[in-house]
Image 1 (tube, rainbow, N blue to C red):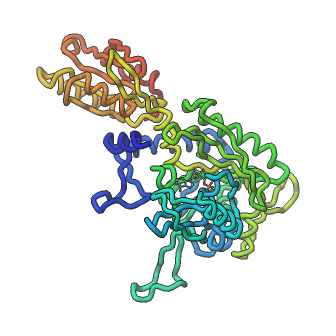
Image 2 (cartoon, protein in one colour; image 1 turned 90 degrees about the vertical axis):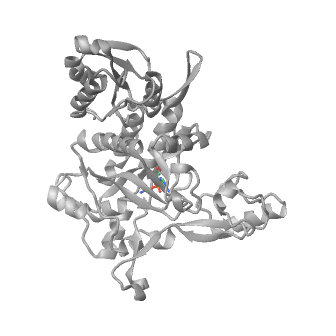
Image 3 (cartoon, helix red, strand yellow; image 1 turned 45 degrees about the horizontal axis):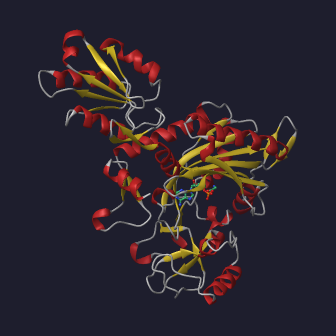
Amino acid sequence: MEELVTFCKTRGFVYPSSEIYGGFAGIYDYGHYGILLKNNIQKEWMKSMVQKRSDVYALDSAIFMHPTTWKASGHVDGFNDPQVDCRTCKARMRADHLLEEHGIDADKATLEFLNEHLDALKKEGKMKCVSCGGTDLTPARTFSLMVKSNMGSPLDQLSEENVVYLRPETCGGIYLEYKNTVNSLHPKLPFGIAQVGKAFRNEIVARQFIFRTREFEQMEMQYFLHPDDMEISYEKWHEYRWQWYLDLGITEEELKWVGHTKLVFYASKAYDIKYHFKCMKKFDEVEGIHARGNYDLTQHSTFSGANLEYFDQARNEKFIPHIMETSVGLNRLMLMFLDHAYTKEQVNGEERIVLKLDKRLSPIKVAVLPLMKKDGLSEKAEGVCQQLREKYMCEFDASGSIGKRYRRQDEIGTPYCVTIDYDTLKDESVTVRDRDTMEQERIAIKDLKSYFASHVGDCV
Ligand code: GAP
């Protein structure tokens, strides 16, 4: 993990936020290549979830919503994690995770259960701070994951009445716009609403780089349906989402489905897609697929008084639709793709680092490199680069030896390097080098557009 974190920082993918002030735990900024990679992952998700389907609509709802939204959803009262503090070094730990390290299943356990088992382990001398190894730990306490802000009150009168929450998940906005979507787009059941956006959680422990952060992005789709269609829709989405990972180069061996052992009372099914993170040496969750019943719309209907029933003409029936959701973290996916792609190879006795990203995800599609910075090669290369920029994210690089420049592009996952040399000036042809095979071929400048159209396709 340390190696990947350093790589991301030094190569312009991810920076620790507010570093010049000493950093800000659990928050990260995305640099030039990071944002391009993240955007490409998002684009592939939108393409698969909205563009390629006739039954899913897009949405971008606000981060701030009426505070009752989170009362209705149960988040204000129940979106908590159990926290234990080390009195010696002040480290914060998740009580359930501490017990799980001792083989005790503490998922969604009560404080009573947690403290009983923590006390027993303390007596045996087995309960230690994960940071300093100290044994002076507080009992487990409830810690709200909701991030609060204040809206519309003067600075000297900040009040509970004006509390607003930064959304802890993006699906809340989808539930609130279900009615407007039905009334404006008139979709037939089953249909979905998909959105990508920021979410905020006051995570107790946020120290696995961008795997778990306090500000992050989610890509969620809520599929509204008649309860009779839940089973079949769940199976279809299960398969559809799995295939998305395989299509982008993740292998079957790196993935597995894990069913939730404890379902919330309104859910009938919940499975996570787990990916094997080399950087953490373990499988962990990237995406959840949940059959949520009609709990969400029923709660919002009760709390708002709005009628959220749907009239199904085909069935001649009025009911509150049930929901099947797919929910995935964009930043977590970015870590997954980086983890998968980060490769070290021996080439002619030297190590090369290469990001073997699917071309659709690569931040830069083509790098244009003049062999020398003289005799008009740079100017020629800039011209070629400018032409390709019309269609692709390109980079011009003239600094350092050609070998070093190839290595730099390998490291950021650029699938093709175009080299302008002395022959180019004579015959208007260039060398195109493939990132993975490192093979080179000679292509006429006039054919570059069609070459990349067939090798890179429509992705920019
Ligand atoms: N609407 C359902 C929901 O939010 P979740 O399991 O809490 O379910 C879904 O979150 C996904 O969001 C996770 O699988 C993960 O990829 C991502 N996610 C959740 N918390 C995160 C965090 N603190 N940092 C980064 N990603 C997170």
